[in-house]
Length: 290
Image 1: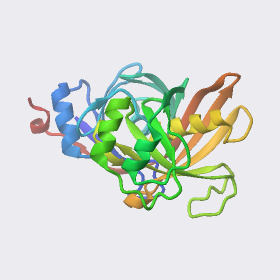
Image 2: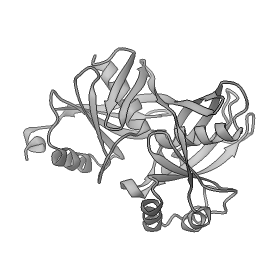
Image 3: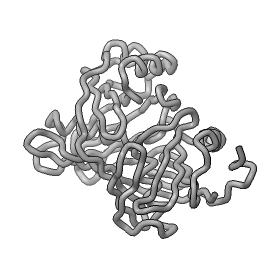
Image 4: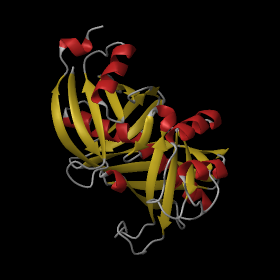
């Protein structure tokens, strides 16, 4: 089994969110894949086998998950590079088939029908994050259910990771994004030169075994859908948001989000960004045995 280590949603070398994509003619057992994901230790490891479309399984260091943004974006780039898919393609994740597109520089994925799923307890979230919250805590699903809480200052957060994990398990969300929103043209270190609003984010995903994630595609998609439905991203059928994440972890990343809007709200959301290769190698017999 070969593996490909890449940085997804990167802003340069050794930035963004690390991902391992392991490829083979047939996948090992689920227990072995989980053990390998723990061994690699990055937020997600993808196992892929060829097919039409290629079939994927996605693991955090502690759990298998049905869908996620940065694994699908990074896997699309890797599979194009090794010739498994063309520039446009489809990947079969456990949570469903997803349309992807990749080129030499990066990739993107489109998730249809993002949906609102109620609200998390904003007061409890604010206490667990050590945050001065600016509003409610809607939950949106664009691959995984994600809660969102607008705050005044990301740098002062002091998250209670055990408490966040327990609350997420109780309320049914995979992670929470604390974010600060800057309108188009606003000054600041993460200002988007192309004119779309920018959200600076910290994301905590204790319920799926990731205390803090460097850059999170499914959460960026959920935030984009939420803000577009609220009318925060302007008008028109295609509404854009730039998500900047990972600065405080030393892994700055950027996600470009486009939300398609219909008469009844968001109909699809696309997330994309740059992918930078880090390493390739092979998993030996000892890693696959058992």
